[in-house]
Length: 501
Ligand SMILES: CCCCCC/C=C\CCCCCCCC(=O)NCCO
Image (cartoon, rainbow, N blue to C red; front, side, top):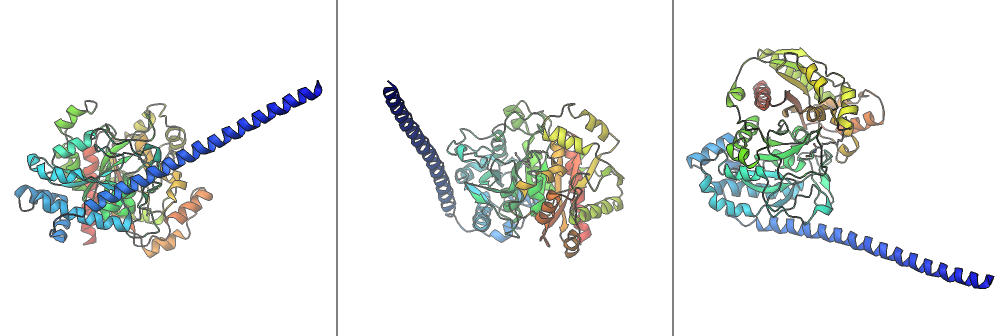
């Protein structure tokens, strides 16, 4: 009896072992299969990109250097008066983009339909961006192309239609021609992912161009595009602008349509993402806003408040009352961040503005409890009330200079200077000021940080070795005062330029 039971037990064990082994083998097989599937998808995505880059090489020659040197406002004038054709402009930028991409790996694919749009763009002659080639971040839907957010599982799900923004840009005569690279998931301010690889900083391959709109930063800073479109939930428009030395504007969330713009996380109700422009100068950012804030946008997306761009506010030269702080009491700024800020403060005072010291109220609580946990429990009322102190705008430090590649993913704490304005939903933009000097680098050697901990040491490492790389400041306004924020940015830009002459 005992023997039988033993035998039964043994055979049951054998059956269970066989089943377990079989199951194990099946799991390994399924895992291998899905891994292979992922790898195959990456191979196919890279092939699609290579094919699009190759196909775009076929085009007539142009007087590229002359065209590429024009600012957006000069270019739109030439396109409107017919002294330049959309073809000349398009091919010049296409050639430059293909060239820059070989060096920096900033593009995820050429939008080949742009060649077809070029043939019919004459019908949008009245558009504010008639004939202007425009680059778009990878997560912005363009019919027929993936918006992966840098994540393999989202490959091979092409957008069924254009995002509202792309549709409006096309109606205004702009020609979206290239999608640009991002970090995996986009919740990072580096610029690499397993599908398309790492984008390099235009001036230093050891550094990141920033992110998540990093492909835009690298492409625009090197002249491959003169206007681009990014997204920002913690600084993703402002970081690449600051790291690459261009301008970037994060509008009030909700001012522009986010229909057809992909994000990796859903249901974010407290810290809101914004879509907005990056460009070489502030006037280009303003033209983008003016172009897209039109009836066509308001009818395609009725959730967007129908408020057209207010040119009067943008062009006003009324003296401003500017709040100013050097340090957010959370992350000690790098020496070049403070130096740039002080320079701009002095220029603004000399230009007749009133600059008053301002302290961000309860910043640690706001960052840790409200921003990190993603819930502005009081709807931001406390913060907003503290900021209602008769100020027009705020002048703040902008994170920089460019971090060493792969450091941003380890330094979420350094987003404090930007993410706070996402949590508050204030419009904010980055404006280039200067470049890092040998003295800044020398001063950095004595940087200890607020907490003198591992993160402070990492920050010091991240920003070191940046002599000659761009520095920037951040300009901020209250919610929905996007035009005022841009006006302030333009003033800073002009004062800095005049000062350099
Ligand atoms: C210092 C306070 C930390 C706040 C908590 C931050 C939680 C997550 C932050 C992720 C890092 C954000 C980097 C920028 C990401 C971005 O703007 N992406 C754009 C997506 O459209």
